[in-house]
Length: 299
Image 1 (tube, rainbow, N blue to C red):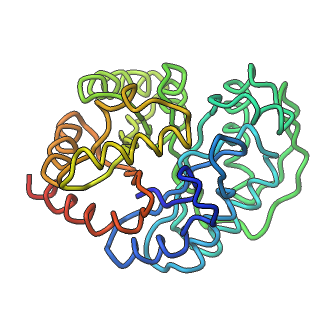
Image 2: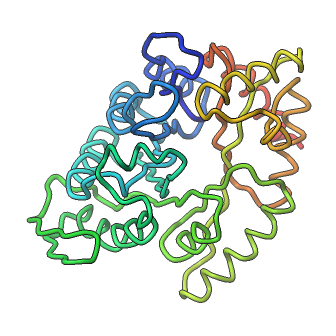
């Protein structure tokens, strides 16, 4: 489940990420994920700070980044922050990364060339595991220069890596580096084809096929029209995106309707959902989504 760190409805108050984490753990969800942006149309909390707060108030649930725009950040500092979150939540960290690119102003603000975001991320993924293992690193690359002593404390094991993105490049990156690919705004038939392509690409690298996960926008409500209106308002507030552009990939309406859509994705090979409640009161969705989880489990 994706915890609220954005304010797409303009509430003017910090999103209830800590309360969300506590409730999601109590309801037995597996992972609390947070998204990442430096600048976007909606006010947003920093993802790493938010995830540290989630780690501090939970004891069982995994804590994840979906997805960290690693290329906007200083690699060594980010490795230190990730190791710190792992120290607060030993063995519970899930790292997802992606290139971003939706908002050009993020790259200007971070002083990073948007055109090189893919190659920059690939280079970072070559270097990051050694930093997380607590090894000294000397690397002079075209985009990243790292001359770091061993960072301590280091995680007991390097966190599992997910790569997110809708492009062919993201799929190739997941096949090369990741344990899981996180897709978004694809239908089941496309997911099935991408799952097969992912397995093929991974085999070319001598790697097992990464698992397939999907980010799915959700609003469970017996009033389907109201659910759609809330999703539309959230999309406008966070992405300036019209609902019609992604409606066919959005799980909204009564629990049975939402569960039916998720089962279709399961049949296409999806093994994990990152559900993003799109409503002014995201905490009110968690019990409803727990009921959906039960329906999917019985299908």
